[in-house]
Image (cartoon, rainbow, N blue to C red; front, side, top):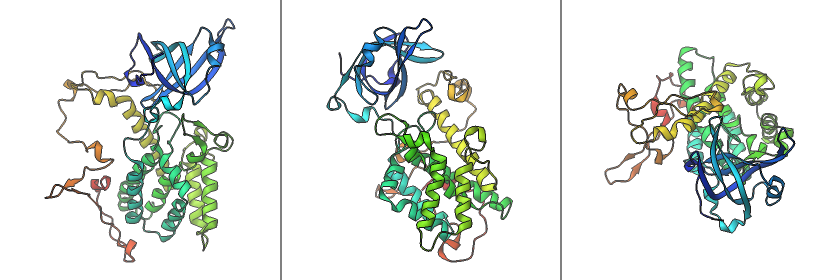
Length: 388
């Protein structure tokens, strides 16, 4: 069987395929007639696809395990608006026959660079010594920091790739700074931006233990028995208690509330619903950032297609329907707003100096209290926050 690689993003309806996949999950089920069939989730760095083996299911199932690389032969078809593979043959192959980076989805940006940007944001935007002391302790543990940079933000749906957690958290923190400034001016004293930013950084930190992501993405035993919300809350308590002097009790309680309530509703898995302005804002930021990533996943191929002839995505189950993009004809009314250079990471593209070198755009701290001075007046909305 061929060991060449065809990516999931390259598959098309009614085509034959013979290539390598990483097995994310497998289970044997029965048809209505009681006949066994094999259900697979197959993965490479471009996504996942469901596979079904209707013939010789038990024999094929015994050839490999979850997290094995397999050479697979089958046919692609469309089922309920999504591509699916009918598997006719499969065999396990050794790790030394594959290039690992072809099978693990990862952020478009380097996670170390994203973390550096997050650290810079903390240094420039967090006024509270107690909040900064807590965040310093959070990332002082090297294993925890490494896991935070590597973990996905979810098994599927949004930021479901290596580096997804840090990408999601940084994006939310940047939004929190902008939105916090806005409402500090509108409703003085209502929102503590430091607290919201800390919540953005903390809200999903339990994912580092809830998920497994060395190969395929799945839930760990701790993830299934405890979950990232309870685990994140426990972590806040451990760090608060480890500090000397101990973290302010009221701050600890508010940080725990942010983690416990960030899903917003009990039917969404939140043990308690948001009971503060900061908790409500955190929940909404989480919803917005996760859904925008889901829309990007759905629309990216159409947006990057030369000519932009197609206006609608395929049916997107996580979003509950088709997503409108609009073709070139439908977008004629738009102004010419250049997009950031994606190669430079999130935020504004860096400027170039006279000698051709890259000059980073670094925001000055807007609150002189960070340097021990009096608090500055709230600034107007500053879109350059989303640069560096």
